[in-house]
Length: 116
Image 1 (cartoon, rainbow, N blue to C red):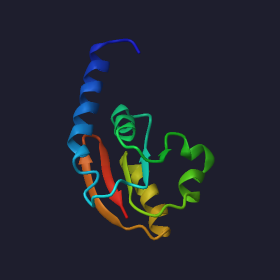
Image 2 (image 1 turned 135 degrees about the horizontal axis):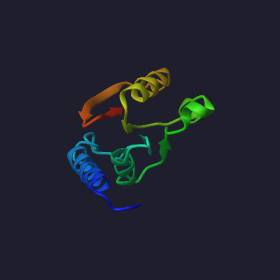
Image 3 (image 1 turned 90 degrees about the vertical axis):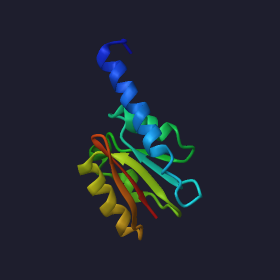
Image 4 (image 1 turned 135 degrees about the vertical axis):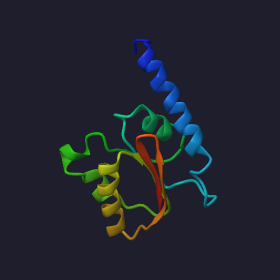
């Protein structure tokens, strides 16, 4: 990565987002069973890397018809930091599996959410 003002500001924004949502991610006390993130956004990638749990990167899920999200069987809490349109798609798929929204908050231009 080339160090530029833009990259420096993006890294600072990512760190601030992780710090802001970091204290909220384990509200129920147990670590999540799954993390959904979008590697196209540095703050989402940093969020996913800060949690030791299985992960699904939705950056290219549209290319395989969302197969990873549709086929996952997860017991427990699912957390994510994604854009709005991806969040709407993932939420619908997880609701079909019996998951319900526990928390949703805007984190800059992304949305941090928890389903269980």
